Image (cartoon, rainbow over all chains, first blue to last red; front, side):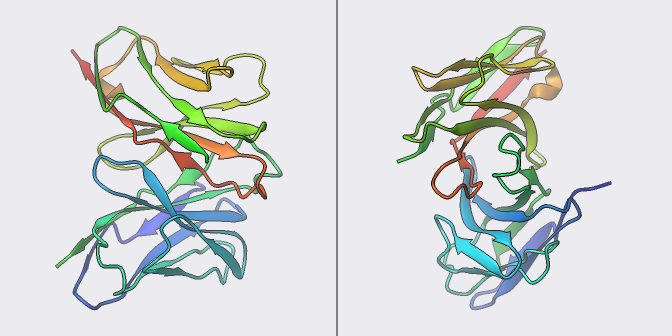
Length: 116
Length: 117
């Protein structure tokens, strides 16, 4: 079945440590997105990418980095510069908006990140 | 600036009754799309329904319908015949089709719905 796979489901970070969240999709989507969700809140965009080897900052990019070396993969690194990383992280993908504007973003099951 | 507002942090509904979840939006882009997602306690985001700004009719999808009032900039979700499995958080989101057409979604704060047996 086509879908988005995020791993790990739970992740713990020590002080001063960088951690990487994995996101893989087999939907052949060009666009991929990373969101952060704090408890009881909506989703906020961290980074997005519309094409391989290109990505743009979202609304809360500070303390995060991404790469897009393959169409299927869009890993997110939470760096030590992110002082409050505890949150639920969701990865999404979609076809390019110009191709089909009514197509929704498809989401993975998320990764819960906590500080040790 | 674009914005989505969901004014109901929490809602209760009796099983088998209908419920309306409110969503208002703000945008200067004449072309946009509105989405509703359901997020159960497990965390995944489930797409429910879509309404385009130029659509003449309100969207419907099974028990879900969208009450789209363009002049008032509102896109309320109506769930008919509520079921216990409808208990979840519901998010309204908007995608502007101008501004480089990035496909970014802007989310509201969400409404938590609890269905009572």
